[in-house]
Image 1 (cartoon, rainbow, N blue to C red):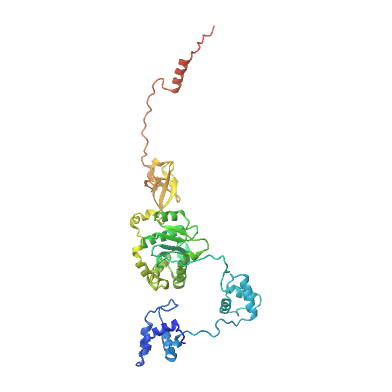
Image 2: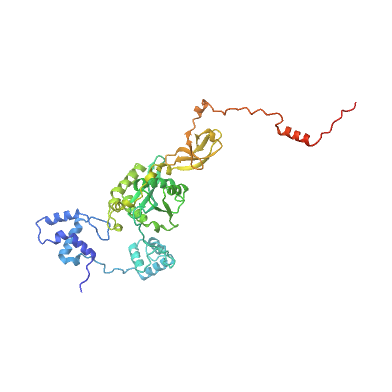
Length: 448
């Protein structure tokens, strides 16, 4: 009975088609054909790479010439799964790992070195990994019956679900010295497209709101947003913005990042292909870093074939579902107002309110009243005041104390009270009633 052919052998033979289909070549022709083949792109099974080197193609061709398609199948090690570790080392590894399954290979090696089981720097990580994997001890957690059941899921259409999270980035030069950056990203679940991503100098609610604003301007409105359970995501301003945009906020349970698995996978790709490739010391600042981020996202990530998308690119998958994406519509007209922040203030007797250490003038008729100050948190600019019911009470302007020195004051018009009619006072009315109901005694004059 013939053995089934290895899928990788079939792939390699398909690559060698232009060479395998011919019996004779002119001098130097094989080299030219291989160079042309190396310039093509391929869907390589089990790999994210899309190109093959000339050396690889030539090696496969020589294997095929010697042994046919069977020679193109990957060779397995004869000692696969076996270990050369001594029984003493094996026993020590098992005991240390079973005592605490969360121990890493580096920790296990250091423990064995401290115990004198092995000499320093003599135990290889690969040997420990093969041994633990063979004995099913390579995991970092204990398998038990209390494990939460998880299911792989994907949104039906683009725009149905976005996932949001923060990744620590490199430090950049700012006016206040070197500052750490944080990558705030929003990823579409169905297409893996990055709705928007930006490096910020913090991971506050304001940073997240700024990325969300750019995302909805570029990619429309998501129906659901899955985010972390941290304080920044629980901010009232973010909840208010999502409520006005009719976006349903879904918070992941603490310590369960699996709910945002696709974004976690993007972060791994981002570390390997972006963070590991840039040189932070050559960056001129935050804008320089973000410029490279946006170029990489649009030119590389969005245009690279994704195995989880049936070998489509994120951009192609997104474009297939444009009919299902919710546009901003009329909300676009008031998008700036939706992302404004609001805070309560009491108007002073001189018609001013205080905000961020500055004084602003409002209508003097609102003195002693409580009002809501509306401000742009990104530009740190006060815009107007509103009533508790959202009614517009007018714009605010910065206090100009010097101009107020010569400013004419408005005084209320004085109207004299109406003249009282005789007997109208409460005392006179009481006296009349008393005289009517009882007789007053007559006081006789004192005798001389």
